[in-house]
Length: 84
Image (cartoon, rainbow, N blue to C red; front, top):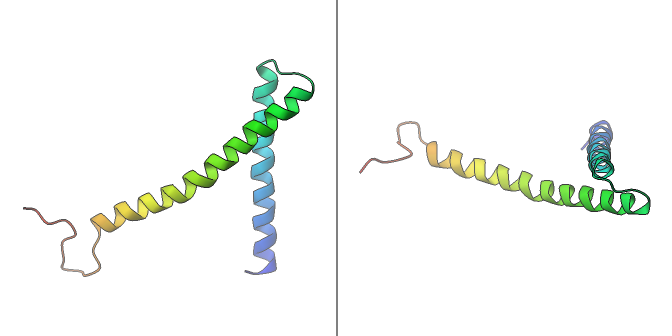
């Protein structure tokens, strides 16, 4: 991976995490959490969202590739799903 691509990837990752943190901060503040608890709830929400995204994105990729293999074939004249 080139340095330019790596810098772009780092910037995009930081922007994603910061936007998740600010969204969680806004939700917690609107919910009435104030003071030091606001920081704790923000980290809890942001960490939960990042963990869920880290699991859902690869699972979605695997699911879509699994579905695609069921409807496509390697050979041109072969049917992927045979009618019985």
